[in-house]
Length: 273
Image 1 (spheres, rainbow, N blue to C red):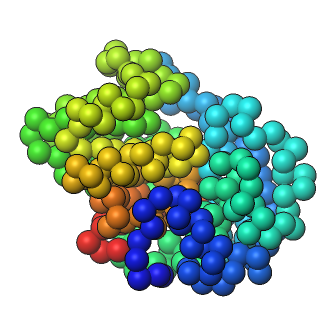
Image 2 (cartoon, one colour):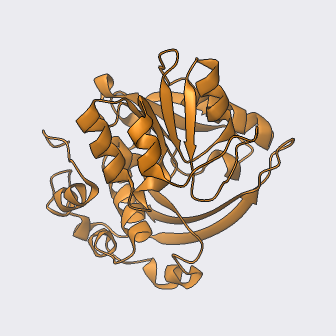
């Protein structure tokens, strides 16, 4: 890994293209590409989660990025296989760039063998059992002072509950939800919740919608702890540990919702990175 941390996603992209993280991306190709859309409603929930993912395989790694409906067409994958990673890291579409960057970084430093990675095995089980195990793993990274206001950017109901259980006050923000499971209002104004926050928890999807750099910069400037939970761009977010990101739950493909069998996620803390 390079001696200095990146301070923005474009800076990380350029460093990767320059070979600062290992082999040049132009020498590594995408073997296969996937476009996935799925919906989930867990037992007892009133919320249906709707997600779309772009996945790219390069060597022994999968790069992943979630995106909003219509951002990437299914036929993108028809021609993506065989492209070198440098071409896709430069692509005009942000989800494509993040998925390609994630594939590269996951290939040159796999989570399974990364220094500082704590492996958490999600058990074989039902969707509810596996989701509970995943959310508990993320919640285990939270270290909240009683009364602290916590911006939750990308609302997952168990994280709302975990913040409250630790005595924190959740400030939920999401582009697609209007209320939490308990009826709490959810804003789509990220700037507002960041301004009030004593700590921040953010989804990896902020990498694809362009808000990740703003969140990281805010947390650096105000010395706020930032926990990221990422299926999207998990290896991309890892590059910012110690440079704005305090802790990370990294879940590379296959994600918990796509398997009934045991799978792994990897927890990192900045002091171990």
